[in-house]
Length: 180
Image 1 (cartoon, rainbow, N blue to C red):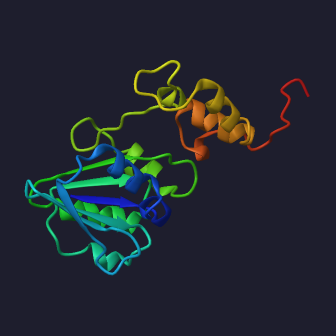
Image 2: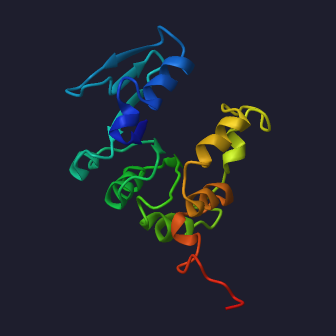
């Protein structure tokens, strides 16, 4: 298994490491740093190896291996995504959670427009799905979600609420008035 994410999420205090600490059963795996600043290889007592890979690693570090499961956290650069797809050549699955607003615009044409329900499946989730007041399993209070969203420009708020990339949100002429 590979978990691919940005370096901040992979670091010792990042979301990936925090989630591993919180959810994985204790004393069932060993950790190794493998020349990284953080634990990057987890060997389980069930025979699974889980490797954390950064989107800032050179694309050549994603070549060669056959991988059965690749979990992507946030949109990677397109060349890394394509290498991840190639690693499943012997059978495998790539799953991902992404807020593709504007950092990696290739995601719209490269993934969202390709989903056919067979090879590519896309499941959209909006900010309310992380609301503990409205959704079982949500982690944030509704008040906190609204406070966070209020800090973003209108277009980004709309994109996050409507579950669509920022490139598909808003207008070119913000002050457009049809009456004028």
